Image (cartoon, rainbow, N blue to C red; front, side, top):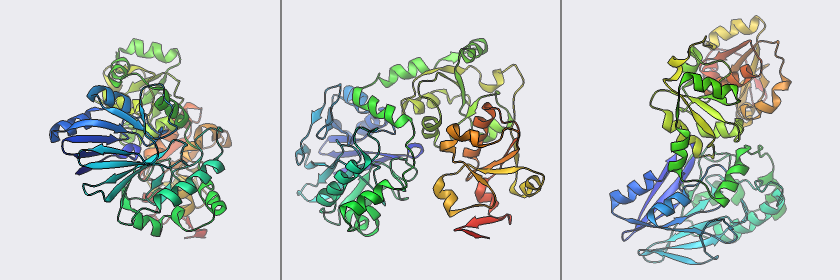
Length: 458
């Protein structure tokens, strides 16, 4: 038996490769199929199963393409109605893979069709459980993604039963392999580790504490941030199916000469600049949005940009296909093309962003600049700059009317990636007096600026 976790940091997503006796199964694959096929070829195995824990909302799964390419069977648990052929395993059913087995555990709660796959080793002993979005390290899946079809409270009640009857009853030694790690919006506050054990989770996971059903429902439904808008589109795509990834790459990765690039923009396409923030700072096309490949690129695109809006890309030379592929991972396939020759092809005046150090910021704020914090609510709650205004980046598109376009704002995040996204969004909406705080809040802590920490000014 061999298990490998294939973790993708920018999506905080974990897929899994499991093999026994020359047979392999892939659990929750990403959109591109090459990594899984290459791994199976390297290890001399055949992929026979693609196991899906549920209809993912935060990314488009590669299950359809992978199953087609390797002639594998797609397996879902109960209640997963699709527009393409799958095998619906029933609760408690065992699926043989070489000398090991997967036992299907129907665990509704995150979604009605959610299931976990309990791996039994060669001797039939419980070895690991692949929990999808049912159980994370330190957290559980959010129960609010059914868009009103089923209430959060109803789903949380189902999850209470799933955890108590199916998960907590497993032996403490069983390894927990979840579908997500820290940074994913599929949970409230997922721990930093990407795997654990049942015993550890029973000790430290708030959702596995002994509590009443009503207390559990309150715990898991309170304090959940609104899901990114693209979640509902991706869940639908995973249910109804999609075009093969090779077709998407061919159609979306098209070089656009400057005249055609400009024509496309005039017709309403949005310019997405995927370069690093420091390069965007030095030169960029006016009204372009910067979401760099060096961060959680696809997640922020899905959070901030309309999935139906045509996009044209400005990328580093050689990063065109990566920019398109990572968009396709979250269902963004309306890319008209990319600027041929990159930023150096632009023949008009380029825009810049002024960045200053936290030390310089002391002087700037004294001269009338307001300070804007665009981090996450959890980060703000731990500590923030005294007198700063707070608008999380995820909420910015619909909350910019809370700011005054005539004011001057110094914008900061944790390290500089999100503040540049925020500045590009604000500029596009008519804010003119903006500066970026280089190094973000992490750099500010060493400058003596007044910080509020746990309600105490320091």
